[in-house]
Image (cartoon, rainbow, N blue to C red; front, side):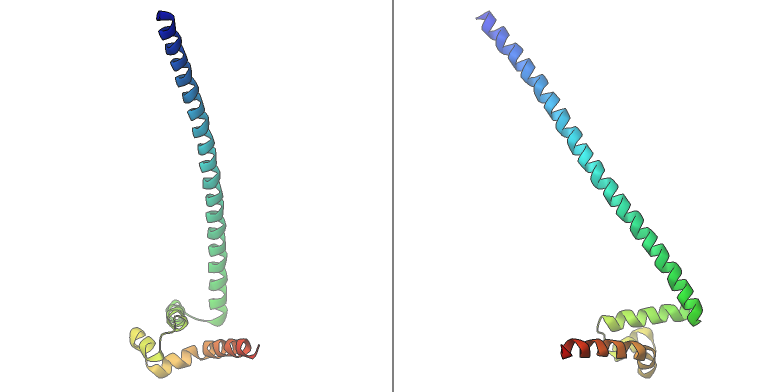
Length: 124
C-alpha cells in the first residue's frame, strides 16, 4: 500500500512538472506571437508617420506655390470637409460665418469636379 501511494505521488509530481514545462512553452510561443504582432504594428505606424510627414511637406510646398496663407488654407480645408460631407451651402456659410455667395465662389472649382465625376459614372 505504501508503495502504491509513493508511486502515485511520484507520478503526480512528474505530471505537475510536465504540465509546468508545457505551460512555459505555450507562454513562450504566445509571447513570440505578441512580439511579432507588436513589431508589425510598429512598422505600420512608422510607415504611416513617414507618409504623413511627406504629405505635410507636399502640402506646404503646394500652398506656398499657390500663395495661400495658413488661415486661408484652414478655411479651405473646413469648406471642403463640410462640402464633402454633403452639407448645404447655407449651412456651411452659417457655420463658417461667411456669405453663401462667398462659399459658392470658394467651392466652385471643387463642385465642377464632383459633378463631372457623377456624369462619367452615369454615362457608363
